Image (cartoon, rainbow, N blue to C red; front, side):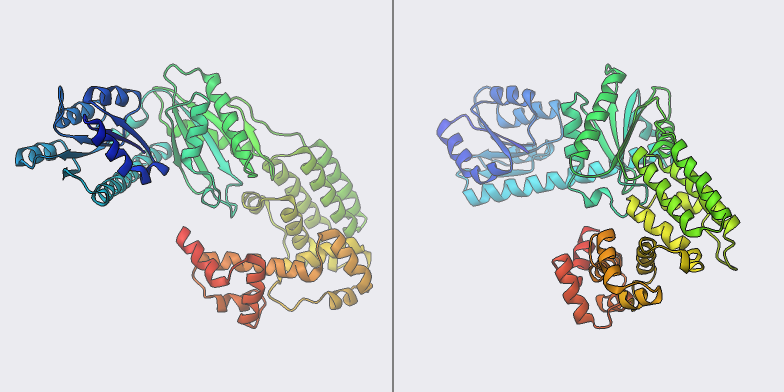
Length: 498
């Protein structure tokens, strides 16, 4: 914050600046030797807190505060004076002055007064921002509870930059990143889009609101692209688009349209930047060819070959950076083919389109998707165990770990069950997965434990059994080794964040 210190006696001003030096690490402190100089400084950049002598030639401290309130009422003031007359204090209270200190001022008293005033100002601004954001969110969502004067917040022509973090329902949300809204606003300001307001629609969606009076549309799109690139530099998968709210339009309409377009075109597991007038979808003709090969294999009873074709299709979709909707269409058709030809047993139906849409909105990588696909097709593969290749067996074991991580899963028993050499299968598993079977099983168990701990409704001892560790002490040792802290500390840290 900016602190403005006004004192007409030079030595006294230097003393005050020296007393406030401990605050200079976090705040900007400017000294002025007259009220006129203070007004000129305030016109350049309005202060957040003013410390002023009350007796000064030309314009006294109270008159200075009155002039500054005319420029902007959003600041606090502390009056210094060698006069203790009640009239000064009463006039100061009418002006909203925070405190009134008598000279000579002690360093401890001044620092405490200023610190308390800044903290109160920060808390008040935070409350105001929360209320303002709540009103903006009601307008953007078209809420029925919006007050009549809420519309004034977004009156006129506005630009909307929609930023989606990772995925619609992925476990990673904005709160898990180091990117706060002030930083996003600063990036947009550097692109010429200032002032702007950043509001959170939910944990995944932030909307940057920019007034467009006199701002060309091309500058909005250029700023959106700049923000998108800045967010990507943090290693996140970010999806961005922009829209324009016209002067006579409800803010809910461009937001809903922007989200609809993004939902149709968003790419899976890679960033998406969607200009305001493009759909951005990717053709999937190459992956569609795999469906024809898959159907031929299924017609010949070659289920393992058909499963391999599914993974080939996923690899092609990944290479094409296909949209989520394109992947949904391919997998929906693939599962329908398996359902038709492989004839799963009673109750063994494969997921349909709606389930796939929900799944793609939650997953974050093709590896997660491939593992999930294997888990769905595992019963069909086990029905034709003799035709399953060792590499497909690795995928089968990975799927089994995801489905039954709490059970006693043994690499040796799995290899024996499928008639594969333990040493060969162990090397193959590490080559395919990137870690040994034991390391992978521990990794999956610890990741699941983190999810359960973050929920906060179970004790670490209960979670230990749920993820496959009968001994809570051993579980705690394994968790600490993997996460760098105990299960209880991990749970408490997430509760504090929440």
